[in-house]
Image (cartoon, rainbow, N blue to C red):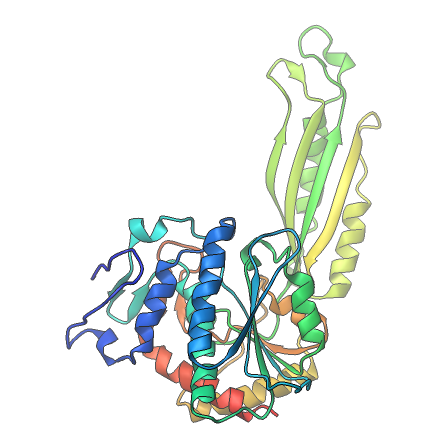
Length: 393
């Protein structure tokens, strides 16, 4: 493995046997993107990342606009080749520039190339995917070959924390566009794109009991933890693998001290559903939870935070066109089975936009310290993006 400096700018002089030596110079710019660490919670760092990408886009002759979002100082970034006065529904490229990795991850874990694998925090999810799409659009712009439809690239700062600030912006752009292309990474170990994602949701339950001395007046108390034990079993039992529904209680806390019958207990659960109908049915079951102990009350909050991405006829038609472009670029594009992970593609598809997700490079290790992309896939993916942006009309 070869280590690179962890500061901007990074430089690399590969040996002749190094797989990086066969790549175009644009890959060195990607090194700077990885060096500009951008964890979601660090708004200053995410803003710096947005500015770095904006400069790259401007150097390619593309128009950029910083969009302030309510509730966060970190802006979204719009990159476009849209000519003045062109208000047609066009191609919407969706990506995010925040990562799950805290600042300092690069210094601890390094940027390295091992055989065909190029490692770096955020490289697979999803800076390399954004870079490929931007580079393809920029190359078309620089060559004077305008696309048949205007292309708008929307990059958000908060996808990894649920797109809580950018969701409405994504939905608004989805409603005004004709096609949606999402730069999330290709499915690990298959390279396939994504046409269907489960909807994601959150359940919060608080049990309110009655405190008492655990030794002197045990019978006077009403245990919130005991009540919650029943509720956890009932909630976990809502998982139905045959229906594609999963529910997981991931966090629980309660009580004050060992010798007090606990008056309060709280849990948070995650759930995933394959379609809106099953989501609505699950929400109804969750909201209908009732206490076993009549002296204990339950406070219930259940909601979907990402609607399901359900494939439409328009999405399948878009997939067929994308597959033709992939074939022309020298590789085979398949569609992965429905995935349980969510992305901003959920919002775009639910808004009625024909949307393909997972169009980034091959690799693996998203959200881990061993995140990587496969160098051998980059040239084909870049060619694919150029062909796809030119072919959609």
